[in-house]
Amino acid sequence: MELLKAFQISASGMSVERTRIEIVSANIANAHSTRSADGVGPYQRRQPVVEASAFDKVYEGNFSSIGGQDVSVPQVMDVVTDETPGPRVYDPGHPDADEQGFVAMPNVSVVSEMVELMNASRAYEANMNAIDATKDMVMKALEIGRG
Image (cartoon, rainbow, N blue to C red; front, side, top):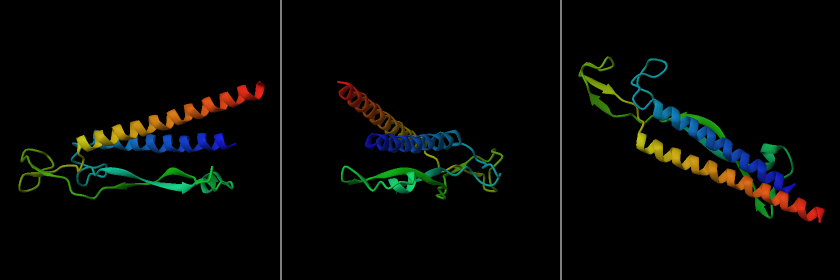
């Protein structure tokens, strides 16, 4: 059963990373959106709030540790908006320019978002590798059991 817990932990990690990738993709797609969905102001960068919850809280069991180590699983608890103001660009011909000709731009740095995307992608891959390693251990255990 310990190996099943490892699958569940890695799957939770993959779910978090998939959510991070989706949020980063939305941020990049809106890096030049000078109007938000509600039509007021520029797009504001979003970011996930990830929390490590005790394994037994998430899976409703009595799992306080695996191998003497406390076990936590990552979960996206919320998605928050970064309220940091974005740059103001002088473009008097833009439809969203103010009286002085400045346009409020989104607070999204494409370079920072690409770094975040690479980190999330690598973390997703690491969780996938952990699942593969766990699967290999299960298969070896089955071979030993047959022999």
